[in-house]
Length: 154
Image (cartoon, rainbow, N blue to C red; front, side):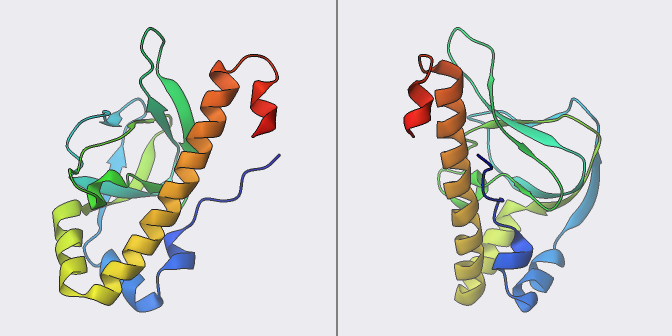
C-alpha cells in the first residue's frame, strides 16, 4: 500500500503566504551524515528540502534508532518549532548531501502572531504534515516491533 504524499507548502499555503514565508528563507547546504537535530533538543529552525534526503528517527530503548520516515524534495523537515515547548519530538539526519531552505522559527512564529491569516495557513500546513508523520510513525513502529502479521490490521 502506498502512503499518501506529505502535504506540501505549495499545495497548502496561498501564493501570498508562500512568498512572505520565502522572504525569510536562507539557502543552506548540509553534508551527508549531518544530524540536523536530536530528539529532545531545542527546535529553533526548520527546513524545506530542495535536493537530497533526510531520515526522521526515534530513539527506542535498548535498540538502535528506528527510522520513521524518509523525506525528500519540497518536504518540511521539522514541525516541533511551531508548538510549545519547542523541542524536537524526533531526530533527523541527512542521508545524502542536502540543499534546503532554512527558516528561523522565532521569526516565523512572530510573523504568524502579527498576521492571523498567515498563522492559520502555516498552522494548517504544519498540522497536516504532523498528522501524516504520526500515521507514518505508527505504521513504521508496528512494522518493526509488532509480532508477525499484527501490523496488517491497521
